[in-house]
Length: 631
Image (cartoon, rainbow, N blue to C red; front, top):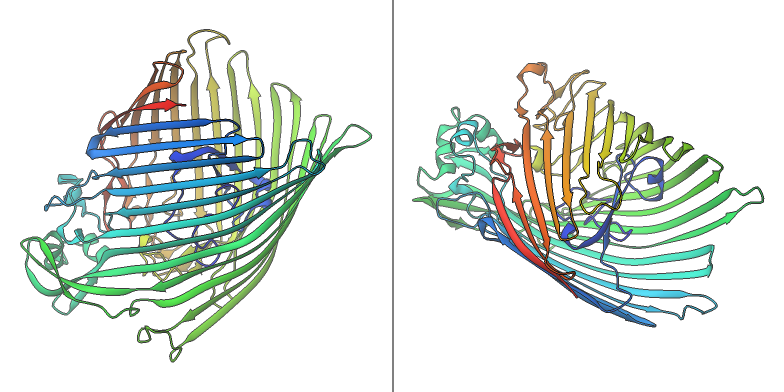
């Protein structure tokens, strides 16, 4: 979410999409886990991320920040805002761009260009008003051009030249634009009673024009098939590399052209009070009506290639590779109650989701959408999603907490398709030992009665985005957070240290088969692919009034890229990696600072993914420097 509002392009009807807000312009990031998820949804399994955008300042304030570094990468950020009694405003602009760290033989750009603009205006009543209230209008605009591809490298090519990109990917580019309008009204009936209402309208347009298949005569093959078996498809690989010339319609580039719309209204009512016994009570009730849709209108063009340069040889029929509208109407309501007495805190809650999903498919030969070949389908579901959490405080150095809640993810529009459901449990403790030492230890267990997969091209599927039911899964694990600061409070120099570790064990509990490359034929006992069992991060800082130095060491354990397919030892892996990053700040004055960042200090070469079609590298060694000015 952004500012408490669903921000995915179509969170109900097409949740797998290609927009995420720029974290660099956020004021804060809220992460909620456990039973508190019933406030949000529709996804209530793994947690909630709420990105909080820059607020309208109480007085004149501004910020300017810029950086430049490796791969001709730059970042520019500026903002200014002010509040005068009843009116306030904020204007914020950010630009990001890079030439990219991969190389095309024709010196093509493999990076991106992003513009991000936000404006807010706010009216607020006098503080002494009988009913204090405010109205805020927010507008956000974002555009992106990313020269990115689904085409990775074969194993041998990655080992030889990990940052190389095949010539056949030179036309691949995603062109995207996002706009958001949001009106927020806040009304305080009393210091204990508040009502907040959001009206929102989001639109996201994108056309990812990318290579999807290669033909050698009449033998057309998908990219994943060719790259995973380069010896079998040697002539196809030669075309991808640009080593062989082809006159016409050999490389097939699909325009994955889609428009997403999401709009709705949500309101929440919060009332808190103290009982006669001194117990604290808080009741929050929320309602949301939401509509979203994905309008898919796609085509495929044919290209030849000569001397490593691609030439357009045929224009595909518009709509022939996808001509449909998927939509969802959803009504959601929740109630969350917090009771706090002495050392106990209890937070029971319940959420209800009522969802109607539909799809209108106009077919491959009706670009004007007359409806001559219209095929429709519908699916409806109503779900009750309860949860409860608790916390018991033994002292200011030790507490125990836990909870149980239902996990839910909505299904697709296919009639009778089931939602994803799970029972999620957690138990943990927060503790402090001596001076400067504190931490948190949590164990968790998620029992999926019905895991929901999705037919994504990004995971080796056909790209229909249709969900499918993938059976039972058990996910168990533990999380550890440990903080240590050997310096006493008030010392001029501080040396805080933090360590986090996560263990995740995800195992299928039933057999099933699919056409997805990352699933394949699954047997009970297989590991769920692309879930990393071991991850840890060690961060250390040296802080002074005028200077700050940070070091981060991150370990990502190896993980499988397929379920067992009958032989767990034969599944491909992404190997583990250890990455070290550095950053520093020098505060010249209270308002001016110089910054520097080193990414991947020891230039480790590692595989980030094997999907969707071949190996792709992570960020190599890079150095970035900049400055920050505060008004």
